[in-house]
Image (cartoon, rainbow, N blue to C red; front, side, top):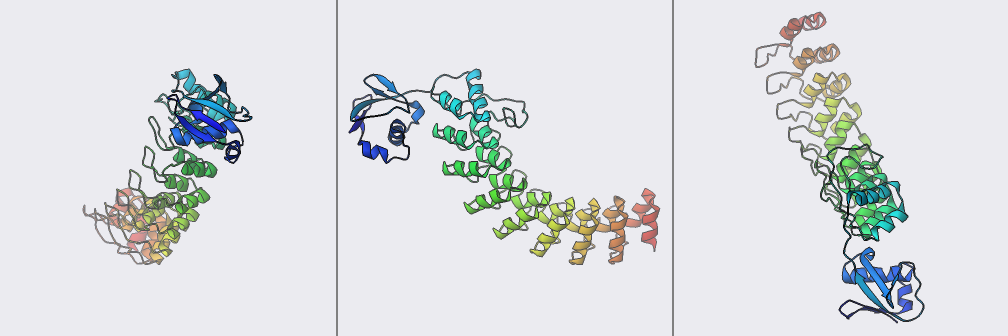
Length: 380
């Protein structure tokens, strides 16, 4: 039998060689430390096992019964140089070096803040200097597992711009995300900007990763600091496939952000015809205005998005609904000189004579701008 004693003289664990061999790790010392971690609450890197006053390495062989002494070590004092060593090894995917540093034992979450962002793919990721965040972004699964084994926080920590999960989602690292979630990371924990893992994966177009997050219970309508849902963000980016997945997961198709913009409003303002059509066919409110009164049609006309505007008109959106300043879709098209959009609206039978709150009609606006083509169109 193997017996492990605490510093107090109390027996922490008694186990047979056969039981030890049944542990997940085939190396006896490593397996024993895994068992002790569950008992003493400290990672193997902070554990020393002594046999007759000799420190046993994690790869040491145990042959026969033995009495071992457990010593729990405090984290070593770190310096900027030591922090950089761990960060650099984590980014290089140098598993052996990370293992060596953690055996100092060095706290994997101690890092100094940096005010200036660095270039992706070098050492830091943005302003993040925590090894777990950077290793997650780079997709180094083995290093991520090691850092988590050393009790690196799977969620957001001091000086983090992003959580490890958000960093992994930004880079599309599906396996890393799964490892972090298995380690207790919160699926909806947002980064400093309020972006959740689902929003990050979705807006980057990582469909399978977004699908995984939904499957494990991510809140599909959790908003960022601007009040945008993941569906609103992907609508602005024109990512139809991701949007369809979110809609199938019961995302609120009409949920507006802090300015009152709905997913359809974003799609129309950006001119994403396929996205706008998908939302309309899925039941989006075609006339829901922003807080300033701009409807999706008015936004499309302002941006000169002819085909989007035509699709909305054909879908029976309100052609003459003005914003809070009395400006109609035709007035906005004229103000920005979008002749083809204005012509489509006129052919669709809009009211050409509606004046805004300042008394300006589309015609007077065209005359003011000296746009003879618009003047001719409106006078016909």
